Amino acid sequence: MTAQLIDGKAIAQKVRDEAAAEVASRTAAGKPQPTLATVLVGDRTDSAAYVSSKGKACLELGMGSISEHLPADATQEQVDALVKKLNADPKVSGILVQLPMPAHIDEERVLSLISIEKDVDGFSPINIGRLAQKGRKPLFVPCTPYGCIYLLEQAGVKIEGANAVVLGRSNIVGMPAALLLIGKNATVTVCHSRTRDLPAVVRQADILIAAIGKMEMVRGDWIKPGAAVIDVGINEKPDATKKKGYRLVGDVNFEEAVQVAGYITPVPGGVGPMTIAMLMRNTLRAAQIQNP
Ligand code: NDP
Image 1 (cartoon, rainbow, N blue to C red):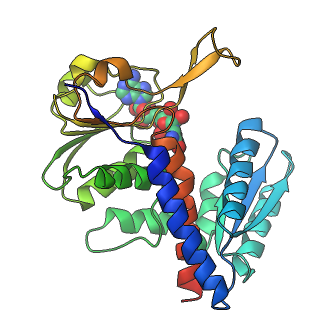
Image 2 (cartoon, rainbow, N blue to C red; image 1 turned 180 degrees about the vertical axis):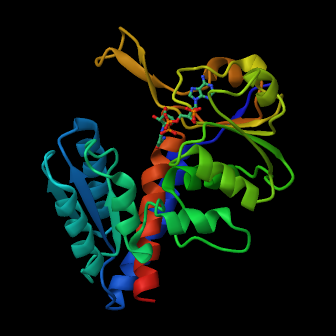
């Protein structure tokens, strides 16, 4: 069998179009423009590129964008003060602190300072704590795992009662993805670097979310026939035919898995575009919470 491709690019575009329409109707009604403030500390080129693409997405959707940049030697006090200033600024709907920050900055402290109503990345301890508790709802769900679940739902994959395996337990992808799946009544197994016999565990999965950052590690014969495979991994595979000298591949060996799975996300064009789309959705939601 050949798996059905889950087109993240098209689904992300739909999310963005819906958000843009809602932004237009809010601003036409005289409500403040939803605005995302990004905080970049230091000069990592990858972080600068991520922040810039988030700002660009805001403008495309008719949202406001404020980008704050502190030098790599900024002190903890300066970063803390900037977050507090953005918390207090009524023009700012959502705050995104780009990670990782330089090693001397206490990231956990900075994230915990973001006001819960502006925590559009969903990483504050309160939002994550609520995600982990039965009967409580976070104001915002972390964007990448939110995108993974949205893709499954849009593809019509039944989550309730399914055996789901999440590869990876990071704070930004694996763990919140597992919590979301539990919240949707899947039976969830979380795997990590000490998991024994990974292929045998993965073979039980009706739904597989792979977020380990290991190029094409998941092989076709690990996949249960008909399973839904969401590949979060972004890895650079050397490829002399490409201008950059590499192409992007996931944590799953796509060519093998596509022969066995029922549904699969490509890399690129799967989870990647969803992350920014969900950030836009969260920023709009923040504006709706602050100015109903
Ligand atoms: P982290 O490095 O923070 O976490 C990796 C996780 O994978 C850890 O839990 C680690 O286990 C586990 N792991 C590592 N090696 C193995 C192994 N051999 N077997 C089993 N488990 C293993 O990564 P992230 O969660 O930040 O990112 C994961 C991938 O997703 C990366 O490729 C990243 O680029 C991509 N990504 C893509 C995004 C998108 O928008 N598409 C957004 C964010 C990330 P342990 O905890 O034991 O160390």
